[in-house]
Length: 219
Image (cartoon, rainbow, N blue to C red; front, side, top):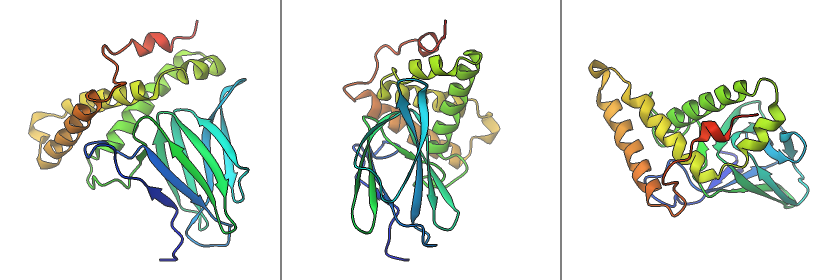
C-alpha cells in the first residue's frame, strides 16, 4: 500500500445495485507509483457526438458531460482498470498533490472485473459485455455515420440504458443450458433479479421500455 488510493466509492443507493452512482477517480503525478495517473473519458461533443478526452494531473477545473461507454483508468506502472457508465457528469478539480475526477450518474457506475461478484458469472461483466455488444451492433448499422449514431446515443436517458443493460444481461443468463445451471449460475441470477427489482423501484425506470433500436436508427 502506498497510501494513495485511485478510487473513492460512495455507498450504493440500493444494496442490490451493480455499482454506486458516484465514484471519485484520484489522479497523481506520473512518478512510477501504482496510483492512477491518466483517465480517458468518452465525452459528449457537439460536432462528433462523442470524443475521447484524456485527463492527467493537474486537471483544468470544470465539468464534462460523459457519454455512455468505457472509462479507462491507467496507473503509473502501466496497469489499467475500466469503469462503465451509461452517462454521467465529471466534475474536475485539483489539489496540490492530486486531481479529482468526480463521476456522478443517475444510474450505477460499474467497475469491470473487480466487482464484489468474484466468479465467472459476474453480473457486472455480463451487463457490460451484453450492453457493449448491443451498442456495437447498433453502431455498425449506422454504416459509417458515427457522428449521427453518437448524437442519438447520448440522447437516451442514462437510467433507461441501465435498465436495458440489465434486461440484456438477464436474457443472456437465461440462455445457460440447464445442465450448466450450477451454484454460480443461481447466485448470478439472484443478483441480477435483485438489481432489476431495485431498478424498477427507481423513479426514472422506463415503463414501458422504449424501442431503443428504433431510437438509435440513423436515417
